[in-house]
Image (tube, rainbow, N blue to C red; front, side, top):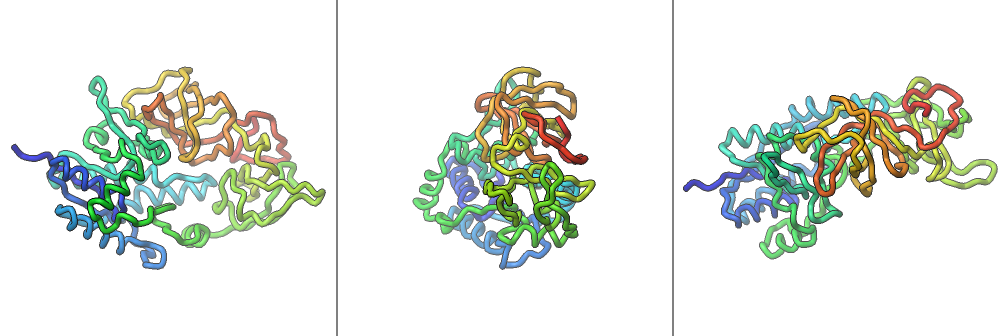
Length: 378
């Protein structure tokens, strides 16, 4: 009887390496595939793709599996990076990892793997899949500190049906230990951070190559100038560092936070104090909805949701649910809800799906002395 064939996306990191190791030990016919997704300015100074490929090949040799490499740079630039630039140019803060998973790692990669005769693909993501009544559910990982279901909410039933997540029931510390015991050469390799195509380079420096800087005023909600910004694309809601402004002249030394972008007048709007009412939203509007669970959630039922990856789950309900748009109401105000980021909805451990945040609606009235179209008045 022929073995089940699994193609594993191997990045050169410890997680995908252990995923391949576990599948091999479980009796699958395993093949590794290294994906190169970025070519522009691909240098050793900031991008580690060359070393990552070397590490992936070394791991494949260690565990005794075949590995190949494929270049998805053209697909990545067309499906992910162009959207990334469009969102920043519009004053929003996108999450390219979400789009990369849906369009590259679980679409282009899956199509290529199936062409190679694969029955399944697998990755080193910390998440789980289970089948219930003919539908495949995306579940949170056992290790809540590493759970990556937030980044996978745009997957569909066809993709889930063909996907294995070998690390879903493991803790990160156990993954490291398995790699060490197996003698994998990358067992102590540092985890990658940040956006894959930017690497460790300064974000403003990178973005300036594609979007021209347009400096302007930093203003309070009352319209009082307090500084100068380098370009609205370089800032995000809730940002504290890098504003170049100190406390008020009246001696109040609370930190300043970005609260909105006035795209029409090229002004960055700021408030003072972490808990300022303008930073708190009790509702948000989400668009571009995607329900990975295979069914649409019930309106007005109580779920949990998060508006950023590292955020704790917050009780919420969905209202005004339409095909491509809904309103999400939270039991407690949420801090720094950011247009362009994703809101992801859960029912216990099950990831139901989510959408892209269009705007947040404030928990309390805030003063607006001039038109700021990026954030509507409540």
